[in-house]
Image (spheres, rainbow, N blue to C red):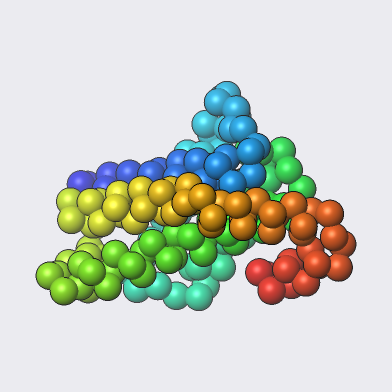
Amino acid sequence: MLEVVIKFLCSLIGSVAGILIIENISKIKFKLNLKNIILLILLSVITTLQFKTEYTITISLTVYILIIMIYKWLFNMSYKKSVLLGGVVLIITSMSDLMWAIILKQFFTNDQLREPTILFLMFNMLVYSSAYFLSHVFNYKRFLTKFIAKTDNSKIYSQFIFIILT
């Protein structure tokens, strides 16, 4: 039972971190209402159910598609922008995950970091807080803001990015 609670907490923390990152780089505000809370919980529950200790492309794609749909509804944005921002969130989170995995694998085994324990919860909190911090780095944030604005205004550029991300 504790494992399920830890998995759900990690999924919820990841969902909230994604929302905060999108708010930071796109200036779109998250409205706290019943519909959005239900969508946030739905994203967390489905992510929890999809959790496996080994990453697979199927799980990653399923979560990415789910993120695109939920972010679209949460922020009331176009699918194009949702694909772009969802991709940016996944890239920032993956960079943070990789950074912390390299550091922590010096002290812990892969199984210790991937099994749903308190260490797993702490590792995920480090990853998501670092991802949130990365989205605030001034030059990186400025680059992302310009990049999103360009893709929003340029049809050819946004179609190219859409194809790459999907």
